Length: 84
Image (cartoon, rainbow, N blue to C red; front, side, top):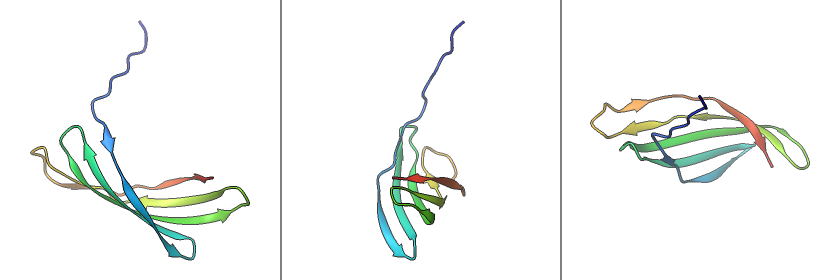
């Protein structure tokens, strides 16, 4: 028996980045999901370490979703990563 993979939702999540100064960035994103949900995801981002060719950052996304006959929901996330 092999591993099976199924996809039941695709998120299209375009947005804009706005530099706020002092290594802070705001990402304003809209969300369209193939399961019928839609919404917005504001993301607040802070660069914590800058190197010559990369930087490390932390971010807090705040997704809000509506639609598909489900109640609206709000979540809070935490991300960290490397930007090149």
